[in-house]
Length: 423
Image (cartoon, rainbow, N blue to C red; front, top):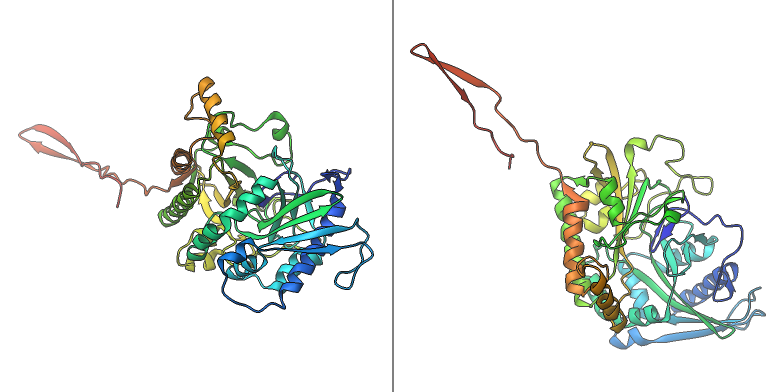
């Protein structure tokens, strides 16, 4: 599989030519990430635990890591660089909220080589996955990093109250400075596990304007389809009543949170694993010579993210299901669904308003993907609840029996009344 998306993965990059980002090779960037996070998280363990204060969200710590090493940092074979950590105490608290211990965080990111992923989007960002499937590391633009800093206090106040959410979970924000270049990085939860093949993958916005995968995208081994592709390829994904209600309740709450922050143009990353095909060779992935196990971070799986009490999630989250949500097609094929909201670091700024204005002059303004946050949220939810996710209807029961009464030599045929859907 050869495509990936923000905080979701379906395969690693197979390009033999090494990628560069802002004139920095991918190997140098991966090395700097591991060295920098290794130092900053290790240094943080010496600081006592305490409540997070408002000023903690605006702290920036910096350390210089020369290639020859120093009293504080090890020698390395990469160019000299400075590593900045944003809101270290606040992010430590957030990681603890999701049960991520410092040693586990370091082990995930620093112990094994990071896996570079191919990127189907137009952002030009690089994506790296930790070998245990737990974390995605993504390069972000300056404006995105700046917006995340402003967002943090309110965003995580909400996450603290509602940890079961499909919103992205940010575990760290960093910046690598080298040769006059700034490379900003965010560490997030991973949505799509590598150990299960995603037979279908979608980036859904609830918009219809130019929302088809390109020919180039469709030619990939595992393409990322879009809204109109989903409508053409599926007659919805069907869930039992309890799961459907929990899923839609979670999506509604998450969209209202994003609306309150004036956030829009986000997507739902949706991965579909067909259980009826899972016995086929290659549909259960073997990673590094062994089959990977489920994610350990709290509330990290799709099922955990939507279940209020967690009981059903605990029962269904196994190494076989990887925390996927059970579903069916209209043909009764059994599925596992993996999903999460992505691309939330968009604020409704002046350029977005301009983008919508000129598009609305040429096209139907209600169909373009960039819209005012309240309209965007409502359209997103309507599409998800009516076109993508559907409730399994209990079969109607019809009394097919009829009876005939003979009255004075003539026959009156009487049919029983059709009984509607069972409650």
